[in-house]
Image 1: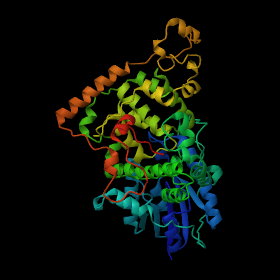
Image 2 (image 1 turned 90 degrees about the horizontal axis):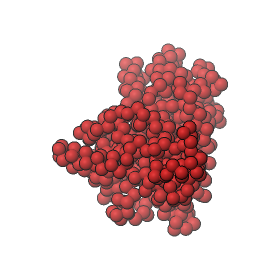
Image 3 (image 1 turned 90 degrees about the vertical axis):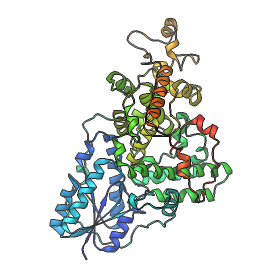
Image 4 (image 1 turned 180 degrees about the horizontal axis):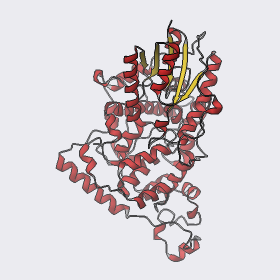
Length: 508
């Protein structure tokens, strides 16, 4: 029997791993992970992401040892690694999960496919999530496809597998600590590995999840009330399907109506996860181009001073800056506040989307291209959605951090500012600034722009572009994601007025 090679990518687990299961049934198995320096040199990848992956690889390695196997980790180009395997073992069958990644991974996969065709190696790919591929064969509505995928049985860990170890590759002590040049500590980030992911999942489904509904928008409550599973979903230490089915089981045994509603809301967002990834699968070019090309003409020149102030959490808007500093430390922030950070960059500071998207991607430990890039377009107005997601930083602060607890924790310059001025410190008199302990050398900056005026100008420009090009705004995502198929989420449709007030979809 020929060798079966399992190429691990963003699926760092052994349970519910179809590629590994099918390979084990096909013959002797070699497990491969390739550290790709070219990938880690991209503008949307970072050390904080790699460190999560490194910890997940260590956990995966132990999972394979428990099965009687070994993870072979090499560094370099994937096709070069495959060439080496063919030289040592002859023609083999390659197994992996499909990946909806950035354009670089898409081009890499095309190169791997071409190599396999030339060398006579079969490449079997399996669905990692509810994204439909190939797009040209998508005949049914997304929800029906997703529901059928989510209900499939989970693949168990294969027993009595026959593993091959050719004693090549790097030992764990040789795996790099850093893959990027940047100095990126991110001391508060989540840790990788399936065992860590399972603990978080159990904690959410049986302890924290009750407060999910109604608590995931404020940065004060989101850290505990959000599932916190996003990096484990992004790198596949848990399978999305096991989370979906685990959530359904928890709902069936929910102790209260509140528990059931919260888990139903979470289950809906797991579907939205794949819905947004489908957008990138359908339109891989939106990593670099506006969803609606004409909207790319919005007047957003690159201003280095504004960009650096936004990066550093020095915009002069307290909640915006608190969220950015929180993100620096944790590599995560809740979805609503991510949208506000994009809004501040795109609408308030008129910054171009590409550098904003790339820099935020590097900050997110849970960076998922299929969610990140469609959301960047939605929040910055370069898609065709009806509602412009423009966030008033003062209103958001008053609604989501009414006691300024979050702001004072993450912006120490404001700790001595009274509640009356905490969200609009630019209105403080010189005497009040002195009372807050500010000096010429130490203080809090004035806003770079008048956000109200900037927002008026931006809305007018969008209206003019839409009129000039005859752009008809799209339906809200809640409508587009729905179909005639029955929805078993137990979540009532929100009133239009409430949806407009929030203006945002929260994931996880």
